[in-house]
Image 1 (cartoon, helix red, strand yellow):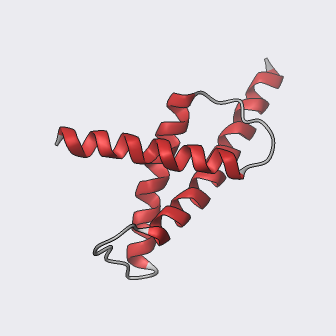
Image 2: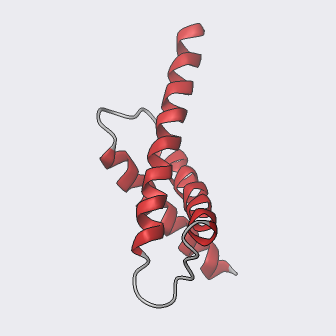
Length: 91
């Protein structure tokens, strides 16, 4: 149980950082939020890969879920950054 949580955090960190590298410009979000978005996008990518691609993930590095996770994380980071910048402008 603890090992799964630690692996989810590490995976979320990797996916979140890769998504921030893909996005142009500077994203003004914390590392904790990057990890949270990465974990959420990893979960969403797993669902997408299972439903759409019928991906079972047997053996090796899971490239398709990683790529889908980075794309989902990039979209979520963009949405979060846009939402955060709107809130700071209205204050």
